[in-house]
Length: 424
Ligand code: GAL
Image (cartoon, rainbow, N blue to C red; front, top):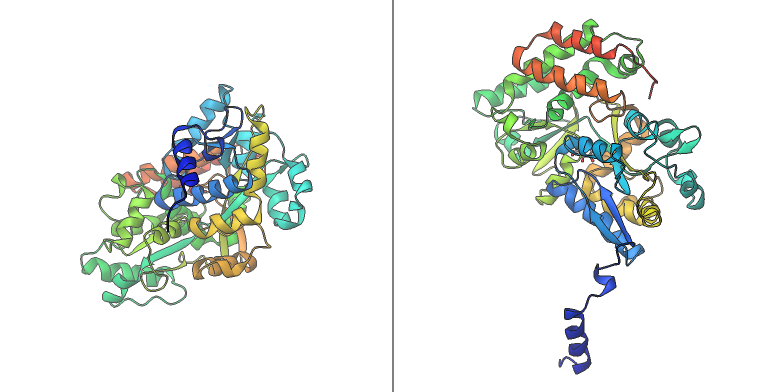
């Protein structure tokens, strides 16, 4: 087929001229989006959100202000500096609950977006409980959720386990888990992959183990102040967490969370206890569910769903408010939720999505979310104030060196004084 001379002329013109709809919008028509989504799976999912937004609102230039570092370990302090200095991004990634309220709403860094809920019918599209309990302050809503992660997942390299004669059913007790670890250790394989160059990954392993030992009620009691952090059950969890260290990869402190998942993919480690953003890495690497990798609940946590939800805010005095509102509207759309979550590993926050667009892991997680008990994560900022989250990270760091169970528990007792400011 011959290309028409007219088409060639167009191509030449567009090659040399600034064309607004290919991303050179004027300065006014842009939105700065702040997040920490930079790993392979995270960046791909963020790109999917951007693509949907570009389709829905052509002409708005997106400024991707992502700061690398899983769990927001580096991003959150960069953000605080910008907020305190009066130069906010238009919108930023946040965890609802204590983080959203304590770090952003109460200091006055956010504008409510309650009207978006009304004008877009979101009052019925999003789980009321979640919106009311985690994102509402004085009857105003301050964020819209892009997706909901499950924190307490134990991932495994299916081929490696099979090769070593280890069978995993649909759940695992701590005893079964440690039996598998011993078998792998005897074969010279570090059973548990951790990448805690950002300490939070180890803190998350502890968090998952704590829930597995104390259960839902005690979890909520710990964060409401009804149970003490030096309770024998907490100490039992600390001991188990200590025992796990004997099976962790030696280079854990040099790896990020996603490098640890990469080690699992490559068969260098067998298990990893990590939130389901890990699924994004498996997908990015084209791994097959149940063939190459599998998942179960972290031992002892069947029937409980640690919620790690990702929302976006509207900055007070947002430099580009209209574009920011359009971005938030896009995040809450069915189209965005169906494009983003299958890649990110999270499930949509909207309850009216087309389930057939999701793979087996997502189906499992959606079922779990529908029937299991939800609890907020401490490591990802929902359950407790930032100071406690930091104290937990510090206690974990020290424990990895001294293995002193009492010191760990006492540090948490001290950190918990003065809260609950409010039960999430
Ligand atoms: C969490 C966040 C997830 C994922 C993870 C690792 O805090 O909610 O979306 O990005 O950190 O970076």
